[in-house]
Amino acid sequence: MTDLWSELVLTAIGNMRATLAVVLPGILAMLALVIIGALLGWIAGRLIMRIARALRLDDRSRAWGLTSALARASIYRPTSQVLKLIAFWGIFMVFATMGIDVLGIPGAPGATGVLMRLLPRLLSALLILVVGWLAANFLGQATLIAAVNGGGAQAPLLARAARWVVLVFATAT
Image (cartoon, rainbow, N blue to C red; front, side):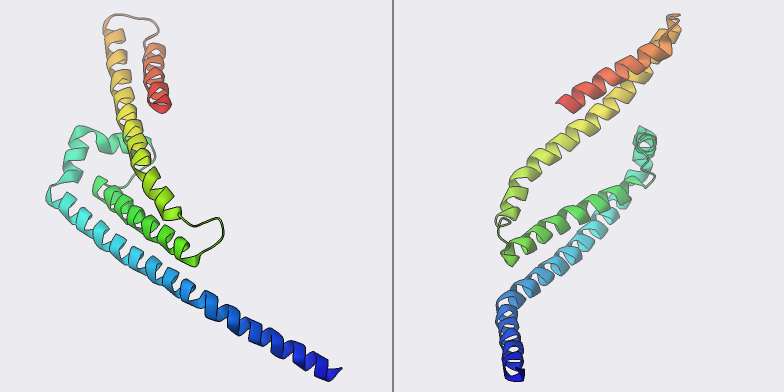
């Protein structure tokens, strides 16, 4: 009985070694890619933040009303820091999906390719939403001012309706 038990334990340990020999290089490669992605993302984020601060983007976005628009969306960070976070997470996600590809998990191969095909569409959609949101806020304010100056009784309702029409259109686009 003890011979059978020890033989089973030794077989299990041998199987574990074989499995680790196959899996460990992929895990190490994935960890290396994730660390490289985090490092490159941090460097790119710092660089973008320094360039944005050198161009005084925070002051300009405050003057353009972008900071108050971001605050209405519950984003209270300066514009340079928002750009830094976008750069970091964008680069990190690319390297993380490359790490997932390296693991060779069934059903996950090509995750980087899918992300690269999806990224331009995602960025375009994000840009459309941001511009639509800014346009909706501008049009809502302009409609409110025009309706109040014109003596309209339902000026706030009209302004909200104009804003929501643009937001729905931007979201549908």
